[in-house]
Image 1 (cartoon, rainbow, N blue to C red):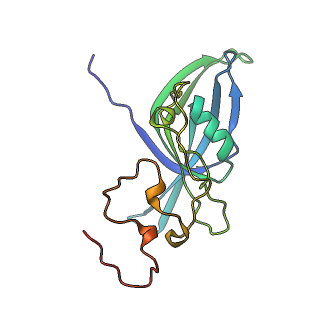
Image 2: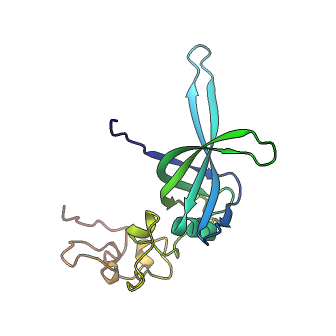
Length: 187
């Protein structure tokens, strides 16, 4: 059998609050539905057309925990994962049912674009292993993250205090001072 490729990337808004449960083995699972809209122009009439697809997404482990903590109805999110089709027998009717869903492997929380909306600034960034749904090793400390991230670089502390900041990086935007003056960018 030939090797296949199954990759899905969707971006949209949650249609309802997440449905978070635990399996009998105490593993956390979150079910969400993301509304993804598209628009096009009808070639024959010239009218603007639109359609919204409602895509079911399932997330396990750390991703389910992040969804449970930070996502609510209407919040935008970008999900990367794989398409999965599964079947089961409905216990009430005995009829075989088929489910097509996206299994989340990575999640990006997006700002809504509204100024009055709360930001995701104080969400701890998961490690690459956590973002892919794998748990972090028990002995490794979680990465440090500032308590909040200001909206304006001028109000921030130096970026050189961040973890993994390269010392030889030629420019730290927070050290630029007043943004209204001309700045010589070294590249």
